[in-house]
Length: 110
Image (cartoon, rainbow, N blue to C red; front, side, top):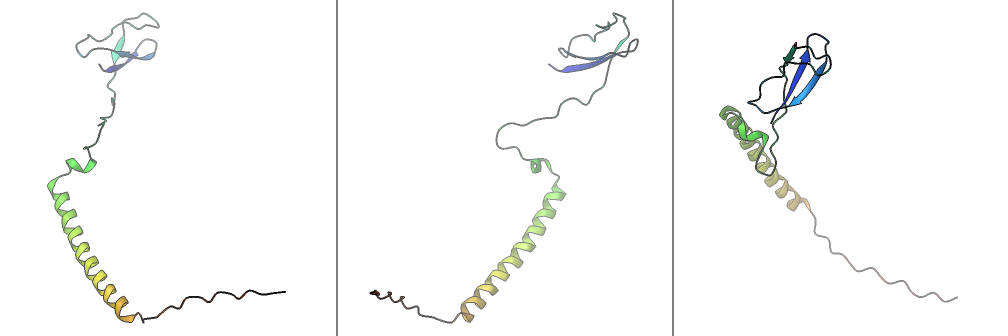
């Protein structure tokens, strides 16, 4: 059931009323008891999806989705080529170094 907003044109009192959609609009002001109340047009409440499976991108138009695919395809290819080049450069330029275990310190007698 929605909440409706009302304003009395006689006294200016604004109030809300929780009513059924099929209920008749209120005519009498609860503050001054005059029959000059009008129902206001309000913005209402936002639509809230609860649970998983609803994403803001689910309702985008086809043009937007195609643009995203074309942009992501180009960037993926350039990234893949860059990683291959970097991998070659790093394996070719690294010298082979053998590590030796550290010597244990000798006991010092005083």
